[in-house]
Length: 165
Image (cartoon, rainbow, N blue to C red; front, side, top):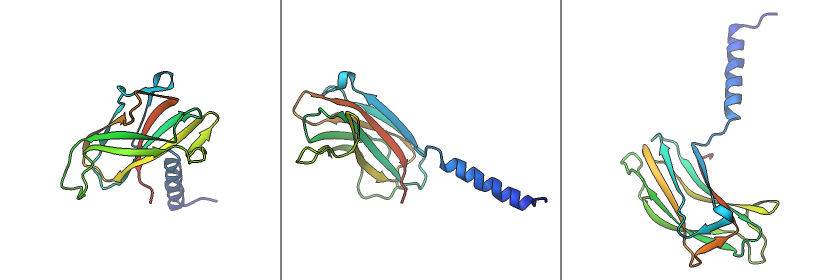
């Protein structure tokens, strides 16, 4: 029995869509590892992301990985964003500048907030969810605590991906 060309074409399109949907949809991902699991306040990881300037809304997500020996229930960070501003992205709130953010890492009873795997815990922060102008943006992250060096912090990852509504 012969399949018609339309059916074969349709099956081909479906297969391409299935294979495409299985891939990683991130626009950008990078990780900064802290030497000896210590984040010194002089270390300010910086990530440069190029946006295509389309109509897509993107999530900018930071994941801070700590060990289960981390001594505090939160961390304050400053995230400084630099990049273009354009009329096409009609947003009354500019993201350009330095913004303080808090990552809650544990509940008051000491229970970890985040995804735990062995002795590590991943703490996610949805920093931004918006459209971006075409061009390169830089996200610089610095710790905003009074302690010079924070122990038991493994790495910091940025992931930029299209928002799934």
